[in-house]
Amino acid sequence: MSTAETFITPDGRTIGTVMMEMKNITLRFGGVIAIQDISFDIREGEIRAIIGPNGAGKSSMLNVINGFYHPQEGEVWFRGAKRPSMKPYQIAKQGIARTFQNIALFKGMTTVENVMTGRQLMMKKSFLWQMLRVGPAMTEEVEHRRRCEEIIDFLEIQHIRKEPVGSLPYGLQKRVELARALAMEPKLLLLDEPMAGMNVEEKEDMSRFILDVNDQYGTTIALIEHDMSVVMDLADRVVCLDYGKMLADGTPAEVQKNQAVIDAYLGVEH
Amino acid sequence: MTDFLYSIFVGPFADMIALPDFLMQVLWEGFVAGVLYALIALGFVLIFKASGVFNFAQGIMVVFSGLTLVGLYELGVPAFMALIITLGVMYVLAFSVERFVLRKLVNQPDIILFMATIGLTNILIGLGQWIFGGETKTMITEQLWLPTGSSVWEPNGGLVIFQHIDIAATVIAVLMIVGLGFFFSYTKVGRALRAVADDHQASLSVGISLNQIWVIVWFAAGIVALVTGIMWGARSDVSFSLQIIALKALPVLVLGGFTSIPGAIVGGLIIGIGEKIFEIYWGPLFGSGVEGWFAYVIALIFLLFRPQGLFGDKIIERV
Image (cartoon, rainbow over all chains, first blue to last red; front, side, top):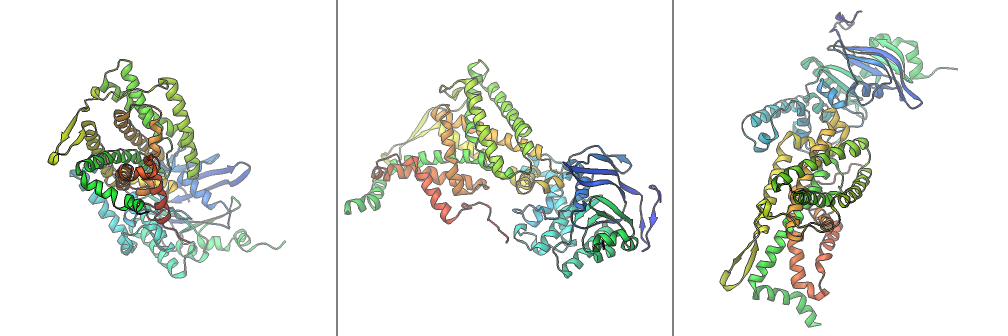
C-alpha cells in the first residue's frame, strides 16, 4: 500500500492517507538502545496500537512522537513534511495531544480547570481584557467553557466537574486526562496505557470512549496497551516492539499469528 | 503573683481603653507594616505558585531593584527614566534566571530549584555590592512623586499621626494585590502558571511553554520586588539589611499558605498588627525586643495545627 492511498481494513473500515511517518528511528540513552531503526506510519483516522513486553520501547516511541525525546537517528514526517527538532509545546501546537502512563494532571485544579488548560493554545485575547472579564475576552472564555462542558458530558464526568482531581479515584483521573487531551481538538491523540490498572468494567468504558472519539471527532489515535484482547478489539493496525526492535506490523489478526510476537509474549524454549 | 497575672490579663487592656488614640496609632502602624509584609510575601507566593519553589532570592531582589533605582538616579538619570530602566533590568534578570538556571533544571526535584535560588541570592549580593557598593542609600521618594509629609487626626482630643508615604504604600499595595489576583484567576496566563506549578510534563503536553511562563512569573516577582524596595526604602533607606525583613515573609507565608494571594495579605496583616500590639502592650514583660521573634512563634504554632496555612491548597495525599 502506498502512502497516498486510502486503505480498507479487514473490518471494513476505510483508513486515510499517511499522517505521520517514522523513518528509521534510533533512540539511545548513553549506551542503552531504547529504539533501534524502527519505521512505521500512522494513517489519518485510524486507531493504531503499539504493543510489546515491558521495556520494549513503546513509551519511548510515544515520547519521540510527542517531542519529549529526540532520536539520534531517523526522521519524523508529519503530513507530508519532515518535522524539524521541536519542543513538546510546539508539537502540541501542531495538533498532537497525549495522556500519560502515570497520569499527569494538575492535581490542585478542578476537573473543569484541567480540561480548560487544553484550550490554552486557542485562547488569543490579551490578558488585560481577560483580567477585566469584559467584551471579546469574556465571549471567548464562555465559548471555550462551552466546548469543555461538551467534552465533559461526552466522557460522562459531569458529576466531578468541580472536584479537585487529586482526590478522584484512578479510573476517573484517567478519564479527566483524556478529556483534557480532547479539549485540544487534536489531529493525533497519543494514549499511553489508557487502561492500565483498571478493572474490567472501567476498561470497557474506556474502550467505548476511545472508539467514540475516533468515530465522532474523526481523531486519529495511537495507543499503547498491554491487554491483548483490548488491542485486538480496538486497533485497526498494530505494531509490535521488543527490546527496541520491530517484531511485526499489520492488522491485529496478522500480528497475533506472527511467530516472533508469540515468542516475545510467551517466551521461547531454548 | 497577682501582679504578674494582672500585667498579662488586665493591664494591657486597661491601657488600650485608657488611651484609645494611642491604640489607634499602634493599629495603624501595625497595619502598614502588615501591608508591606504582605507585599514581600506576595513575591514569594507568585514564584511558589508557578514553580513550587520557595524563592530564597526574593529578599535580595528587593534590595537589588531598590539599589538599581537609586544608583541610576545618582548617575544623573531622571527619576522616572530610572524607574523604567530598573524595570528593564528586572526583566533581564528574569530572562537570565530562566535561561541560565531554570532551563537546565526542568523536571528536577523542588529542593534542587530551591538550592539554585540560594545560589542566585549570593550572586545578586555579590553583584550588588560590586556595582553599587555597600553603603546605605536614600530612596528617591519625592522624585517619584510619592508623598512625604504627615497628617494628624485628633479624635476627641487624642492624637493619631498618619505618614503620607504609609497611606501611599497601602494604596499601591492594594492595587497591586487586586491586579495580581485577577491576573491569576481570570487570564489564560494565570491558568498556565497554576498548571506549571502542578506538573511540568502535563503542561508541555497541552502546549504551555515552560520557558515563557517562568520568564513571566520571575518578571512579575521582580516588579513586586521593585515596589517593595521603593516602599520599604522610603521608610528605612535602601541597604542590604532590607534582606532580613524579607525573611519576615516566611512566618507570613506559613500563616497564610504558600499558594494563596489572599493568604499572603491576611497573614501579613495578622503578623504586622499582632507584632506591634504585642510589642507595645506585652513587650515590657519580656524586656522588649518582642518584634524580633513574635512572628516566628505564631508560625510555629500554626505549623503544629494547620500546616497548609489559613488559605493554602488542601494537602491531598492518595495512598
